[in-house]
Image 1 (cartoon, rainbow, N blue to C red):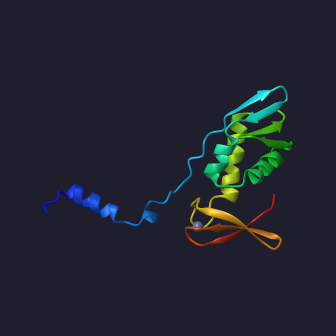
Image 2: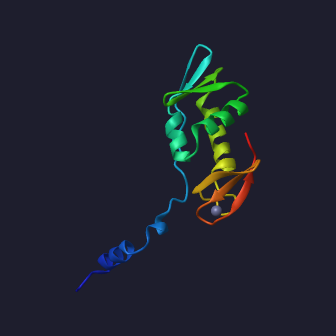
Image 3: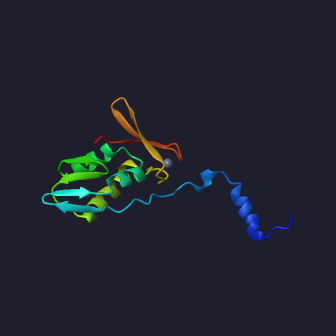
Length: 136
Ligand SMILES: [Zn+2]
């Protein structure tokens, strides 16, 4: 076999375990919302929750509380009482991510929330850290 350097490199990459290519950060879709009357419809709510890998009810509870309003899920959308700008929603989603998705130790997003007795923990699948998180 007479492989060129690039080909050898490619071969070497193919043999690496897939964990090496774990995502380092999340590409969360930007909020896409419209307001009708006194309500705000967040159209890509389900997409956002999927990328965050979190229960939509949990995300909804957080957003409603931070916006000091009530919200509900309608199909793939979230509906909030009141008028809110995409910018504000994006800011809150970012804060949600920092508190409930990103591991505080290694800063990776490969985490899940587990409940133990009355407490919630953020468990990191990348580094194994277990950090307490508040309940919403
Ligand atoms: Zn971690």
